[in-house]
Length: 137
Image 1 (cartoon, rainbow, N blue to C red):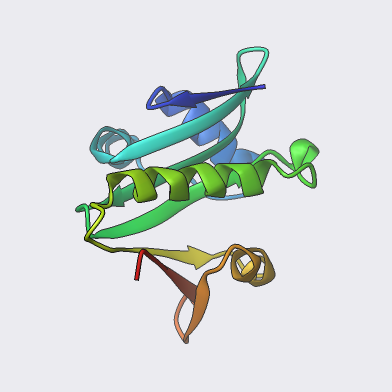
Image 2 (cartoon, rainbow, N blue to C red; image 1 turned 120 degrees about the vertical axis):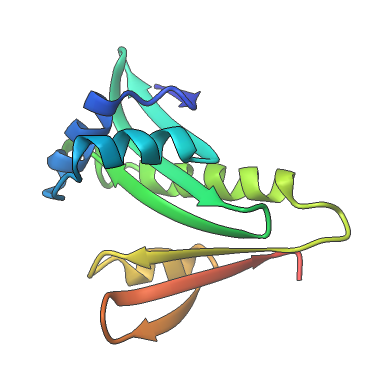
């Protein structure tokens, strides 16, 4: 398997979201979102994307979105590797004397996964559990 940066196509994006039962957005919204992402990470096997994750933000605050692993590849540590690499990107972009905040909204049932990754849970009544991780306090 091979990680790729900033090479996720619209069709692969939609296919990965569909693979885990997520609805897709309108095409114009999705294309704009992909174009405006700070960092897009894809994991491919034999040219086929099997996992993805994106970061959006402004250099101080980051939102981790669209972390997806195809169901047939789940349980192999790929989601963990994806999140680790997304966090490594934030770490690399954070100045030595600075700090960054990474936030996300977890799918129900995934709270434990993000807690193990060092995120702190912020209960939210409207959208499930929100999480935050500070890089370099």
